[in-house]
Image (cartoon, rainbow, N blue to C red; front, side):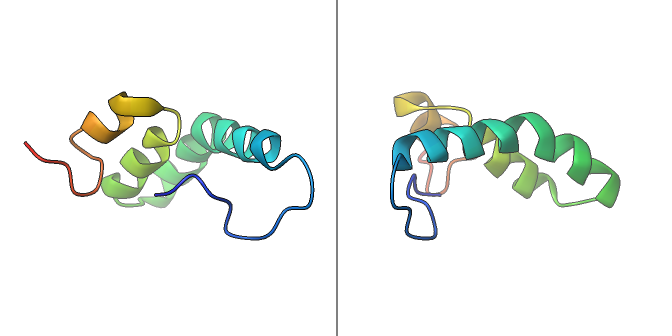
Length: 66
């Protein structure tokens, strides 16, 4: 659940990461729900749209401390 891309990007890494995360958050849940994916995956996708402390404080963030 890091913010780095899983491959090397030559230019505009921040822009590319932002665009990919935006697409994922907007479109992936709608496409994945009919496939009966685990709720955990949907929460991980949702977390991509949250930044800063709010992401780390979300109860679905890995290693979240209650």
